[in-house]
Length: 164
Image 1 (cartoon, helix red, strand yellow):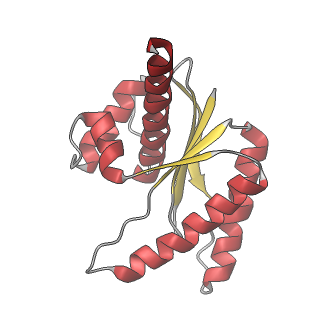
Image 2 (cartoon, one colour):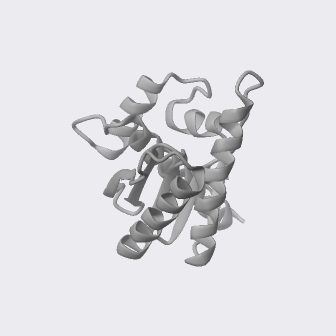
């Protein structure tokens, strides 16, 4: 099973596709979003880039970070909402099921600590996937962590189904 993890953003969106059965990275990187003045053009770039990834890698499912808001930065949450909306639309158009995870849940699955710092998350991604070097930029490691989190919950659901 191929799982596409997305770390959404309007300037940089990381993506990572893993082969769950082999616990291996198929491809990871950032979606091409040109620095443009108007949001609608950046959203179009995000959509087109994601469609290209989906069409070339044919993932079976997608996992994405849940939307969160910090009271000191509400504009960031609104911008993130725009990006997530476009990502969810692309998944729907390509008939890919989507699961969302809170950042604290992803961190907890990856490190055992829902408040783990970015460096700990990056090292955990390397360990889980057998990577020799930390993916750069950090958005790529975050996307891989999201895919790994989804894989964890898929396997947990399978174990629960077998037990019942």
